[in-house]
Image 1 (tube, rainbow, N blue to C red):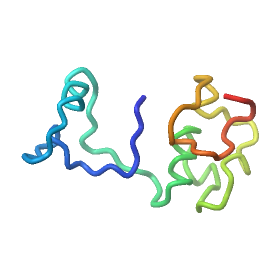
Image 2: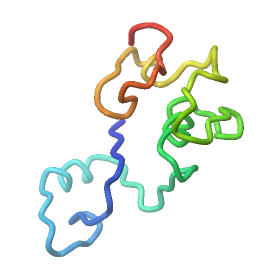
Image 3: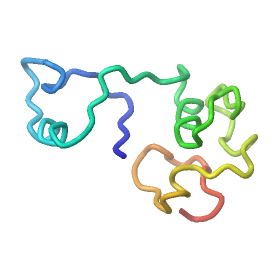
Length: 101
Protein backbone atom coordinates (compact mmCIF):
# COMPACT_ATOMS: atom_id res chain seq x y z
CA UNK A 1 0.00 0.00 0.00
CA UNK A 2 1.32 3.41 -0.92
CA UNK A 3 -0.43 6.16 0.99
CA UNK A 4 0.07 9.78 0.01
CA UNK A 5 -1.43 12.68 1.85
CA UNK A 6 -1.70 16.30 0.83
CA UNK A 7 -1.47 15.34 -2.83
CA UNK A 8 -3.76 16.91 -5.36
CA UNK A 9 -4.60 15.22 -8.63
CA UNK A 10 -2.49 17.46 -10.86
CA UNK A 11 -0.76 14.47 -12.42
CA UNK A 12 -0.51 13.22 -15.96
CA UNK A 13 -2.46 10.05 -15.09
CA UNK A 14 -5.41 12.28 -14.21
CA UNK A 15 -5.17 14.25 -17.44
CA UNK A 16 -3.01 17.23 -16.51
CA UNK A 17 -1.28 18.21 -19.78
CA UNK A 18 1.59 20.12 -18.13
CA UNK A 19 2.75 17.79 -15.40
CA UNK A 20 5.15 15.03 -16.44
CA UNK A 21 5.13 12.07 -14.06
CA UNK A 22 6.53 9.08 -15.98
CA UNK A 23 7.25 6.96 -12.89
CA UNK A 24 3.75 7.44 -11.51
CA UNK A 25 2.33 6.64 -14.97
CA UNK A 26 4.33 3.42 -15.07
CA UNK A 27 3.15 2.47 -11.58
CA UNK A 28 -0.48 3.31 -12.46
CA UNK A 29 -0.42 0.91 -15.41
CA UNK A 30 0.38 -1.98 -13.04
CA UNK A 31 -1.75 -0.87 -10.09
CA UNK A 32 -5.26 0.15 -9.14
CA UNK A 33 -5.93 3.85 -9.48
CA UNK A 34 -8.72 5.30 -7.38
CA UNK A 35 -10.59 8.06 -9.17
CA UNK A 36 -13.11 8.66 -6.40
CA UNK A 37 -11.23 8.32 -3.13
CA UNK A 38 -12.37 10.40 -0.18
CA UNK A 39 -11.22 10.90 3.37
CA UNK A 40 -13.79 10.07 5.99
CA UNK A 41 -13.00 13.01 8.28
CA UNK A 42 -11.76 16.54 7.51
CA UNK A 43 -8.76 16.36 9.88
CA UNK A 44 -5.62 14.28 9.53
CA UNK A 45 -5.48 12.46 12.89
CA UNK A 46 -9.09 11.15 12.86
CA UNK A 47 -8.81 10.14 9.21
CA UNK A 48 -5.40 8.48 9.67
CA UNK A 49 -6.52 6.66 12.82
CA UNK A 50 -9.58 5.41 10.98
CA UNK A 51 -7.56 4.23 7.99
CA UNK A 52 -4.92 2.45 10.04
CA UNK A 53 -7.37 0.85 12.48
CA UNK A 54 -10.13 -0.03 10.01
CA UNK A 55 -12.69 1.68 12.23
CA UNK A 56 -14.84 4.75 11.68
CA UNK A 57 -14.19 7.94 13.67
CA UNK A 58 -17.45 7.33 15.57
CA UNK A 59 -15.86 4.11 16.86
CA UNK A 60 -12.32 5.40 17.38
CA UNK A 61 -13.66 8.52 19.16
CA UNK A 62 -10.75 10.47 17.61
CA UNK A 63 -12.32 13.69 16.36
CA UNK A 64 -9.41 16.13 16.53
CA UNK A 65 -5.66 16.25 16.18
CA UNK A 66 -4.99 16.30 19.94
CA UNK A 67 -6.34 12.84 20.86
CA UNK A 68 -3.83 10.00 20.70
CA UNK A 69 -5.01 7.10 18.52
CA UNK A 70 -4.81 4.53 21.33
CA UNK A 71 -6.90 6.58 23.77
CA UNK A 72 -10.04 4.53 23.05
CA UNK A 73 -8.50 1.69 21.01
CA UNK A 74 -6.41 -0.11 23.59
CA UNK A 75 -6.54 -3.53 21.89
CA UNK A 76 -6.81 -2.51 18.24
CA UNK A 77 -4.23 -3.77 15.78
CA UNK A 78 -3.13 -0.95 13.48
CA UNK A 79 -1.81 -1.67 9.98
CA UNK A 80 1.84 -0.90 10.90
CA UNK A 81 1.56 -3.49 13.69
CA UNK A 82 -0.10 -6.02 11.43
CA UNK A 83 2.60 -5.72 8.80
CA UNK A 84 5.31 -5.26 11.45
CA UNK A 85 6.58 -2.23 9.60
CA UNK A 86 6.47 1.46 10.24
CA UNK A 87 8.02 3.24 7.32
CA UNK A 88 7.21 6.70 6.07
CA UNK A 89 5.16 9.60 7.25
CA UNK A 90 1.70 8.15 7.72
CA UNK A 91 2.13 7.32 11.42
CA UNK A 92 4.66 10.17 11.93
CA UNK A 93 5.36 9.97 15.62
CA UNK A 94 1.92 9.08 16.93
CA UNK A 95 1.89 6.06 19.16
CA UNK A 96 -0.09 3.64 17.04
CA UNK A 97 2.08 0.64 17.79
CA UNK A 98 1.80 -1.02 21.18
CA UNK A 99 5.19 -2.53 20.66
CA UNK A 100 8.06 -1.58 18.40
CA UNK A 101 6.79 -1.98 14.83
